[in-house]
Image 1 (cartoon, rainbow over the protein chains, first blue to last red):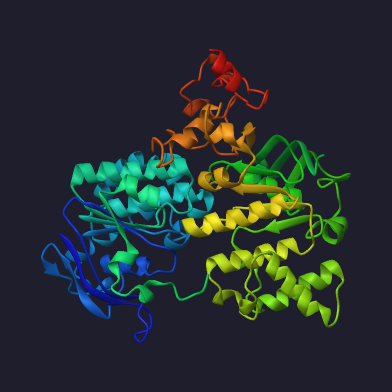
Image 2 (cartoon, chains in turn blue, red):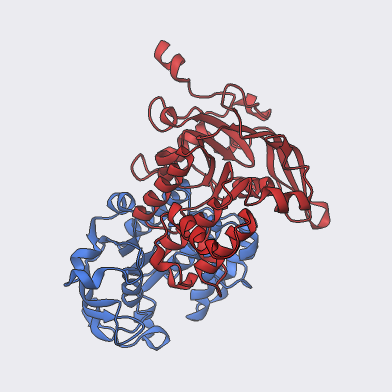
Length: 230
Length: 317
């Protein structure tokens, strides 16, 4: 079980974006988190993936509280998460060929070259990347193709938990459906839990076991309104 | 009456090593005043290149063929001086893909609006301030936010600021290139409704998008682009409702929506630099047959050898 308990987080301690939020994802469950842009849902997703240190509250992973954030998180906790971000261009090293991009988490955790190559081949087939595309660098592929590689990278260490932050916001309908199918195949095979952050109610309702509205998570309605006027 | 008449527009990019990218191939469509045409397709299918071609903003290694008549002016043949002085902003207004990046970051919205109003309408002096405020008003940009810098605006407000700039010159043609990317559903609806209002005021609107829900909300007609070609042009009501699209690719796109079957089209679009012989969709098409080795012509609104039946045929059958 992945539990967020009383999370308060943000970028300015005097004005947190997320205040005292509780959210639980059960084993193998897919939870959608739905909210307007600027509400703080991506910040919460980063906290859940141990990528952003909250100012208050704890993240409990399978009964054990998180013992650090970002690179200071213990390896077994850090590698329990696979994360896919909204902007593939901003989350892919432009110097790496897609093959190396996908293998990066395995290399970083000291797995052998042969093992990495085998796992990359497996995943590339699952996300629909050909050998020819694997040899290219990010600027030589489309957004959709790069996001496929980023999803493969998230799945490569076989995470127990997947966090998808607006993974499909900039993709067309067909690519969206294809990537969701890959995630669901992985979950069926591995039993991983999933937290999907997005603003498309139709997509989240179709994809997830349950959808949580951001407005029901935050205790005070005024705190939930985006601070920039629309 | 026609505002924009695009005929057999092709764009080729010459790359290093003699390679050629066929970004747009023989695209033809017409657009009348008060009408909205949505150009839809997967990313990388050539939609945005088509928009750049209409504005004369293609890079130096691009070569165009065909014509794009805006009134009696061929946008493809016009020189840079004509385009800069009489077309951009004056006869074609551009609503850009990422408004926050389109606005100048170091100047307030008011200063940018005033500059645009001054350049395009010749208004000077004290009335300039009120003219700029009126321009903001037309795009529903709140006057209280005029003195803000672009980074202080939310996505929705930045979008309206960019729309206000596009409307200043009172251009008969509005070109909206992915105007809703990155916005949430409420803002998409609001942005699209505002664009529709400007079309209803008598402008022709060409909206380029991969967001089918947005296209459904706004468009009178839909043009579907695949691998650089327009493969179907249809009435929006028939396209999104019954009997639905006729081209198998367009059907596949709609079936991928989470509100519908949520099944992707198998495979990926071909590379524009390495298009297959014949119909570019054949490799992914459930209806493909031997005849698909020839490129189908766009006839009766659809470019396919085995299209789904049109409305009248469907009712007859």
